[in-house]
Amino acid sequence: MDRLDIKKPELLIPAGSLENLKIAVAYGADAVYVGGQEFGLRAKARNFSFEDMRLGIEYAHAHNVKVYVTANIIAHNQDIPAVEEYFQELKEIGPDAVIIADPGILAIAKMIMPEMELHLSTQANNTNYASINFWYQQGVKRVVVARELSFEEIATIRSKIPMDMDIEAFVHGSMCISYSGRCLLSNYMTGKDANKGACTHPCRWTYHLMEESRPGEYMPVFENERGTYIYNSKDLCMIEYIDEIIRSGITSLKIEGRMKTGLYVATVTRAYRKAIDDYFTDIEVYKNNKSSYLEEIKKCSYRQFTTGFYHERPDADSQIYDSNTYIRDYVFVGKVLEDTDGQQTLIEQRNKFVVGDTLELMKTDGSTHAFTVEALVTDEGDVVTEAPHPKQKLWIQLPVAAKKHELLRKGDKT
Image (spheres, rainbow, N blue to C red):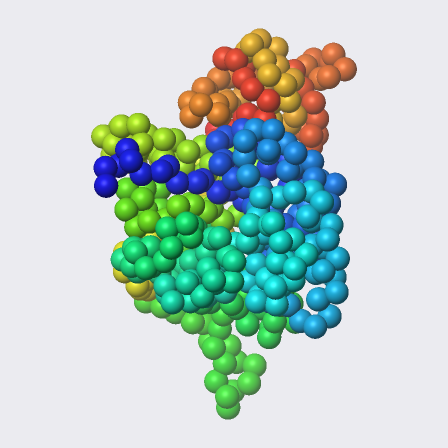
């Protein structure tokens, strides 16, 4: 099939807050996924109240963007009555789909929200076409395949499931050391259940060995003298493989990160949006720009990158042994509050910057404009030389016209 005959895949972006939802929409998301304050797998994310979720759905729909709501915990008996009540409320605000992992929760959703589109979470361990066909018969419209699948396996699945069954796959973000995210370490070590959204990320901790006959004597764990973070995976990044993603039959490119910052959401959304659009507009432009997409991705917090299981099974080089910290070369310093012609513009400050700093305006059209801060004026009209207060409103002159929700960033070393 010719590339131009293939439907452009959906770009699906995480939104851990109403602000991040609006940023994702501004920078080109086709759909966003959000969690309520219960029943999702990111309990430590800010998550959405029902009122914010309603506002977010209205905002997204006004911009032709879909909203999917996570309800993908592995439920216990005590969760069931609350799930039923939650779905009764959810159907009133009209998301485009609900993401579910538990068969019982799926049955409740079908009973209470019979018109709702149902997506099956990666937590359900979707690794073969037989199980995906089973879920199709249960009314599931989309399956989020396991992170442990290769392009070849996904292509086989695509050829053996109904054409109207969507395949969604993670293409960017943090990786879990446990199979399809089903981690027991957090529950065992801290009493907080990863399968109910409360993961404490023990895979990012430092570990030592203790020999049975010498209690209290701790020995560092070394892997070729690279360090002790033996469970700490690199981040997934597939932006250089859009062509292989398309050929495999993936129809929705999912970005991980409901606990990430607005800068992460803007940067990753903008980079993948441009890569996808370039691929479908001019494949040679896409090929020539692969390195620039990757460099743009690195302008938000990230770990070292891996391609996960897509090409081959990960080996020791897919782990990070010497650190559990992110690389942060850029800082989110402000957000444009209203459309402007590029003259004096009202922004909301997020991190400190001063007159004389070089900032970058991240345009939603994919361009970036560097400029020097020449003056700052508070919303009350006072001239200042720095912006030390979180969420302070300031007037600043930008080099070009800007749109509401566009972000300003500053190199961390400038």
